[in-house]
Structure formats: C-alpha cells, structure tokens
Length: 366
Ligand code: ATP
Image (cartoon, rainbow, N blue to C red; front, side, top):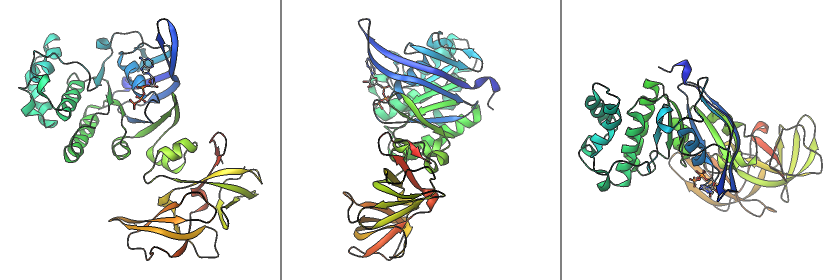
C-alpha cells in the first residue's frame, strides 16, 4: 500500500540544454506538480514539449537547471540515479549485453544481497508475460520484448517512485491491453507513485488518476481525466485531449451577460455559459463531437448539410458543412441515428459545453 513518504513533488523544475557552455534550448520552463503517494499521473503532450526531459531529471539521468525534486520531504535532486529510489522504465536504458535477461534483472538485487532474488525475478516475469525471455540475451530481443524487460527492470527493485517513458508502445494490441492491466494492478498493489509518458490517450485515460498536459515546457493543466476533458484550461488542452478532436470554429460575440450568444458562419448561433466575453469580439468556439446533439432548424445550433455519415459500431460520426465556415464540423451521435448524406441538419451542445477561447492567446473565456 502507498506510504505517506512516497509523494513526488516537483517545484519550479527547469531545464536549459547547453552546448559548449552556451544555453541552446529551454526545454522545461518551471514545472510545479505534487503527485500523491501511490498516484499514477500520465504526462501528455506533443513531441518536443519536454516530457522525456522531465522524466530524465526525475530519474537522475539529466542534470537540473533549476528547482527541486522531492520524494516525501527529501530532495533527490543531487543524488545519483541509483540512490534515488526511482524505478526507470526507459527502453533505451542499457542492459549488460553479456548477461541474459534473468541475470540482468537479478543483478542489482544480488548486489544488494536481497535473499530470494531469483524467485522475485520469476514472479515478476510471470506477471509481465515474459518468462520465456529470461534465458535470452539483450541483443536478440524485439522492441516489444525490450519494453517488457525495461518495465521489469523498473519494477524489480520495488522503488518508491516509478517513471515510465512510453512503456507499452511497441507491444501489439492484445499484449498491450494485458500488460497495461497488469501494470496497473502491480502499481496499485505496491503503491508505486508513478509518472508515465504516453502518446496514447486511451492508455492515459485507462491508467491515470490524473493527467498532466504539457506544451512548450509548461504544464498547461493538471487534473483528473474528467476535469481535463470537461473543463479545459485553454484552447491547447481542449484541442489536444479528446478523440475525435474538438471542433474549433471562429465566432463573433453577439450578447454577453448571464450567458453568451455567439454568431458562427452565415446563419448559426451557439449559446455558451461564459459570462465574461466582450460583445463584438471574435473568439474561438469549442464544441466536442461527444457533446453534440440534434437541434431543430429554428433553434440555436450549427446548421448545415451532412457531408459524410460514418456508422461506427458504438456511434455515428456526422461531418457537417456549415455555411460560412472554412472547414466542416464533426458530431458524434448515437449509433443508428437517422441521418444520411445530403440531409440538412443542426447540432447544438449544452451551454456549459460550449467553450470560448481568446482568439489571440487561447486562454479560456469563462
Ligand atoms: P517526444 O515525445 O518527441 O519524445 P518530448 O516531449 O519527450 O518529445 P524532450 O525529449 O523532452 O521532448 O525534448 C524537449 C526539447 O528539448 C526538444 O525540442 C528537443 O529537441 C530538445 N532537446 C532534447 N535534448 C536536447 C539536448 N541534449 N540538447 C539540446 N536540446 C535538446
């Protein structure tokens, strides 16, 4: 079970890469994050936003330019990687080529004279479905096999904190699902405080207690999956999280007050719960496909012509051309909805699900 000493706290954590003594790139620009004991946080963000750099600083594989990293109330910032009590699951993390996987995994345990090292390796290998890999040498492994070994290596020493970079990306779909479930079970069982980088949103949602959405070296939002999805902090987060992607269209604020009416394209209006929009201002309006529902022809909504209707198993995706908008919008309707290509239809969303963003900097207008 999680122990109170296992929280992971990042305080104003910064990294500027240097080349020949000169700063070349500010990859992490001041991260504050408190991860509770036993909590699993998924770090999400586009390529180059600083995710890996952040994990490498926690693991001790990269020096810190500023700020602090603590486990419980102890700073680990200046400790060597082996003294941090951080399990590191990076695929690229070196294994000793002459040793087989069993020997690689048992090595650290035996060095510390852990009594039943081999039994522990066996038990973990079984849970990660990699028993048959134990007798192999690192050089012969496929990328999916290497990932399982990297995961085992991160877990074998029972660390307080676990940092995993894309731990399942090379596994095939079914192995991925099983190993993901087992990882979650192990994480719960042993109370590892965990931070995992993933590109896969479904994976993040199914694993994580909270999501940290990162862009340009900054945490844009840190919250539960529901908070991030339902109440995005800004346009970047709204756009990055969610599948299918949120519709973002330009609109002009008509009336504001207890709610806001926004004119969109040539004949559509939407109503938002926002109260601080400036009448006459151009704003970005976000509506998630999942929040769309049919609207009568004379009711507020996005009105136009259905271009494409995709009847998928769990829902129907309708692509709608709205007069005056440069790109079509997408609505996710209940499966079997009676809509066909060429139909004239309208969509709206509840006023608290119509998000407004500042057109210049993407901040949320509430
Ligand atoms: P990805 O998902 O593609 O791995 P990431 O979010 O993990 O991306 P990082 O690997 O942390 O991003 O890199 C952040 C930024 O820092 C990138 O723009 C990268 O080019 C830059 N960077 C990484 N390592 C160095 C280095 N040694 N020197 C200079 N810049 C670097």
